[in-house]
Amino acid sequence: MAQSKGKLRAFIKAAVFALLPALALLLGLSLLIDLLDREQVIEINGPADSVLYLNGPVYEIEGDEDAPDAQYVSRYRAMVRGGFDARKQPGTFRIFVLGGSFAMGTPYVYQGLPGMDRGGIDSWMREELRARYPDLRFEVINAAAGGQSSHRVRAICREVLQYQPDLLLAATGNNEGYLPPTRLHRHLHRWALYRALLRLIAPPPDDARNLPLYIEQRAEVEQLRWAFDRNLEEMRQRCRAAGVPLALCSMPVNLRYDPRGDSPRPMPSECYDQARLLVEQGNCRAAAEALVGCEGYGEAVFRAKLLEELGDSQQARQAFLDAVEILPMGRCRPSLNRIIRAQAAAPGVLLVDLERAAWEAAPQGIPGYETFFDYCHMRWPGYAQMGRVATQAIIDAGLLPGEPLERPNTQTLRGVIGLDGKYIKRMFSLNLLDVQMPLGGPEGDAWIPHCLDR
Image (cartoon, rainbow, N blue to C red; front, side, top):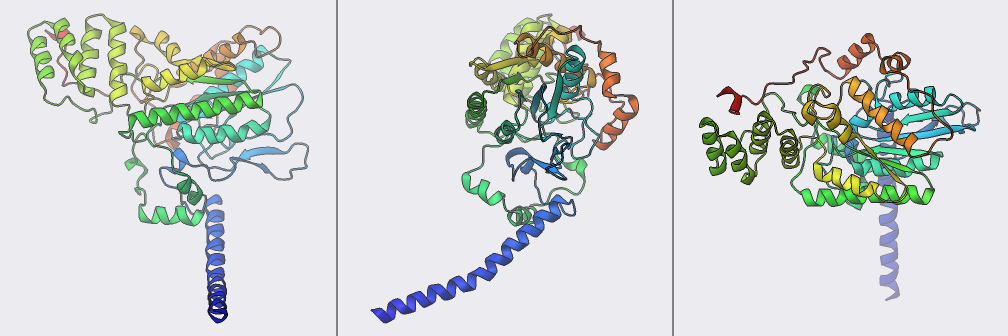
């Protein structure tokens, strides 16, 4: 018995000594890959990385941390690099803006490069607050990133609460296409070697133009809603525990979005065929009613167009919203906006109703290409309006001391921000976009028979 136990101990000892060099090699290789990735020598992150995962702290002190002017800067290429004081100065009101590319300010803000951070909601808020409260010092920090979901926003919220914020403003909901990763996947994903292997197995397209326009919306809608609600709930609870107000933004989207050549057409069905026949007979009101029983995206858009032509803008907007719920194409579902409103009704939470603001500014109350240039990203006047609404909500909530001065006009703020034509052209070029994009948007609904053509 003693001899067999001795053999077992010897085997275990030999196995441990055999594994240690291999583990050390893997650890060293993973650290080297992580260093090369951070220095931008190689790229190991896949499409889901910017959506779901946060591998380590977002911010780190650049240079000497004991210097009086030490700054935190983002260590992620997918985020705005611009930093903030490591030692918060007295009299400073510090706001973090969290969310995806809408909150970041695409295409006017370009992630990862210094100085490319003008024109997002944070810029408009910062300059308006400084102009209206000249005796206060404001830091409005863009902590958003393109493509990320509320799961990653929740993780960033957890981190930035340690940097003495006076307010967190979250505008998230456009990228809810992935279910949260399991705990095992989260732990494995922290290893650079694991991420590199995943990229080798499934490399992205060589041409950036072949990447999808938006995050895929998976079929597990109820689970996605549950996960979104849970993420907002955790953010709310953490802010409450830290004594930091949380502002949740309802999300504005382009209800008229119809990507050129990509818009789904109605599948043959009895209700669609009946509606089309009624239109051809000139009975458009009955056609719109017939489409109520249809379940497809194309049918919902068909109904919205009919109601709009009949002059029923409110019902038309609801039909467009129904279409977004069926097929978001990267946009925030109406059901997620309802979750945002419900979470914002809790104590210590402020609702910034950007969705309603976009409705009120749009012709017939249906936001389209006059404000957006794609499915959720705005032209700069749209971002200016969103910044104005967010700033006024903060003022109305009594979060700032004293009475504000009169608001500067938009062109004055634009000049202070530095959002001139040269800068805009450069940003659109970096984002592979056309600076002369048409206001009307793509003509993708020629298949819809129009009542007023009869």
